[in-house]
Image 1 (tube, rainbow, N blue to C red):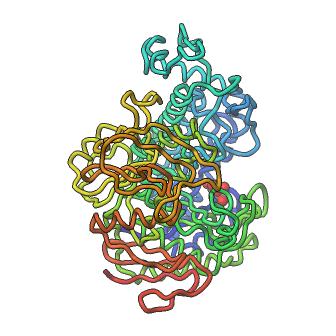
Image 2: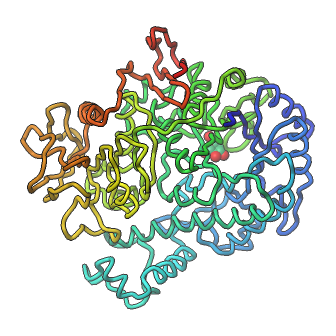
Image 3: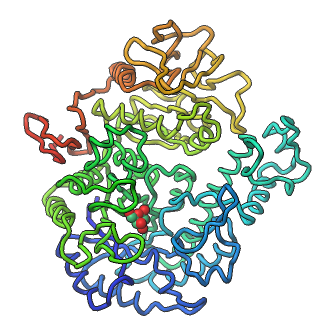
Length: 632
Ligand code: GAL
């Protein structure tokens, strides 16, 4: 398996005179890949239909001559201003009905047929021109689908597309009315054309209406991406990838990934800690220069699965970013740590964003490997160190883990639509579970909700999985390890209704949920060790009870190798419950120092110190931001 470094570069931002020197410096720093092009539409096609690829020909030639491999991006995240003259209605509309205007990026509606045709046209022009170019080693479609809240649009193209989508799915308005339960509040429709998008209703719209809208919107992202993939594949055999983001759940990444060769993602540990973490102030203060110790790993594992084993970091934070509420510098050593952690989780390439800090426009305060004056920024030396270490290090290909965690985008939509408690969030529930597993020193695989084979695993967890797909049901019937579902699993039908026989609709669970409670901050249901917070389900009926609350209510139930958890555990309860399940499943756990994480590959065990103090690991002192590996 290859392991290499790369960088994101914008030749159109710089005088052509510096390209050759930039390329030579990249190669000298040990970088192999260079991604270009993804925002350059106004230079590729300055006027509608008038292409100018001369500069791109020369840029690719210069980079290729330095031995670099080019990842060429399609520029469809930044349609030029003239595009609006051709398609005035292509802009997205937000849930409040406001137009999302030109002047930054991602200003398009995924359902706009005219814009999709323009994207196919420019993609085809690029693929024809560069599809056989030996310097072009891979293609990136668009840039960060869903970033800046762009999955959903509530404009005319989305409305027309949604009605078509519903007509195809249900065939008759009566079938839709029955599935959604539209007799409630006299919401029954006579024609598909009477159905609106689920925004701007007086009070909440029907959750089934919302869920279908989210499925529709996700399908638009899939189709948008697939159209570009087809255009590229017609002219190139190089792998095609997309750069996903951290904690974006609005579209189904499993579905998009099915059309791509590699899943990549953009890892900004410090930005994400400030911008996307649910943890409190003291946690953020503690990790402000290191990032959350589990956030990157979670996404590495998620996207390794989305890429069916092939994962890259397309953009790695190299220094302070500009977009979080606070933007500190990484602790010395963290750029190296993040890079090695990605490799330990199976990354083939870690590519830094960006080569040189731009002195102009929106990201002028965002660091690069070089300062705006071309002097080296601190990240460059760490990248160079990683390059040297990679050259000296034997392969560390990923191994199949023994523990797996199911991640399901539809469940994320369902619980966003109907949280029932203000702080019930699907991503957070799965991520808390992942963190608890990592604190026990476990390496984890992430699985899709329709996973058909669990045979590699000793323990499989599916918190919050709204419904079980047939494949997973069949796989569970053959499964010999332990499976833990809940809380809030098997809780809805595909139509977002409560199952007729009451939840949980999970094999091997005989009790029924007779009522659920969401718990305000500070309210808990105490367990022998720790407590449930946020969510608690009352389980009635006969069946085995493996753990009860201090009040005597069932907390963990299930027959045979199936277990169901009736609430959202705090960290102490997670440790106790998962620790015990690991013992039963025959899984070895590890007592790691606080803030230290472990990851096993096929050949090595890695330790990462996310703290600001040295820690003792394997009888050695691991410095702050330190990485240690040991052959297995
Ligand atoms: C990413 C994006 C890049 C750049 C970067 C800044 O989300 O793909 O184009 O904006 O953030 O951190």
